[in-house]
Image 1 (tube, helix red, strand yellow):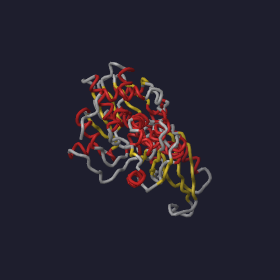
Image 2 (spheres, one colour; image 1 turned 90 degrees about the vertical axis):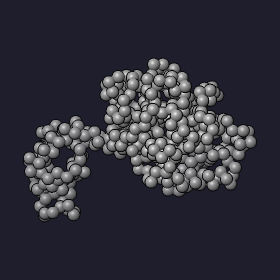
Image 3 (cartoon, one colour; image 1 turned 135 degrees about the horizontal axis):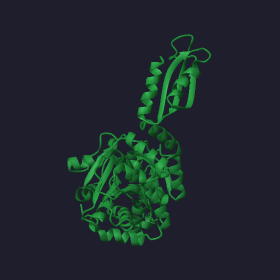
Image 4 (cartoon, helix red, strand yellow; image 1 turned 180 degrees about the vertical axis):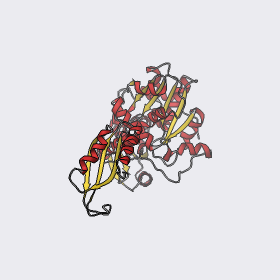
Length: 404
């Protein structure tokens, strides 16, 4: 590969895009600071135009095309964030854009991509199939492929995030960055290390999509056998050759977090930080909450995006509450007699559980006796210890408890 992206390229990217993207705020987080034992700030790229950092890299690359290339248009493949970034960047520059998205892509993300001016084409069941369709379209039409991460101009654009961080918090000692294909961390690390060599840059991947970690282990980009994470913005099967070289050179450490940990982090962001982020945008927060890495202070966590489907948000919040012990759902059986349900809920109430939902069934496979009723109960709780206390109370009262 060629030379790594330098600070001059990143500074140029910032100058050429004035007025295109916004300088996102850097917000002090008391809850993360308390959890980490020192000042922690959030770089709110979830408040960026199109809802993520992707506009930075997409605009930088498209701006750098020749007039002939711009006339041919651009094409991209994406499940959402890159699609919107390419669409807005191309429209801003007067360039026609076509974006291929998986058939299961979020409806709001498809609609947003169209609103930003792209022709959105649904192709294939998964991202890899949409990407193959985009490559084929590029060959036939001559449209320039805008890669989501593995291009020097894209990396330079993403690196402008670091320029803002260093101006907003000059004494920053560490930056935590989510990793999908590695474009964002490549740009941030290249810029940060050039301007402040002793800064620590830590990457975080979902455990079910740790492609960059695998690439580092093998010494080259390799495909994961499978990708399994609900953080769809980070669900890349393979890192890029360009990004992997940047990670090798500039990144100090890469850690992984589980989907459960991401869900708990997302819940905290909504509940305590009052910020809506997508699962990928919460991975850095999960690192702080789990203590998975040592973070020199002050530290900045990049909240990379906020494009989450409202239905997924509802599901994730409930899942996050369950992971944190804040939500407990169980099934049991009681006698089909007056007062049985009241007695059951009374046991929960005695332990301070807040019942938020009840379903009962008099027939079905789980009802084993003629005169019994199956009850499903959803309870808001105060944490894992509280759940254990409620379950112990139910067992002591003679109820068989099955977690849902």
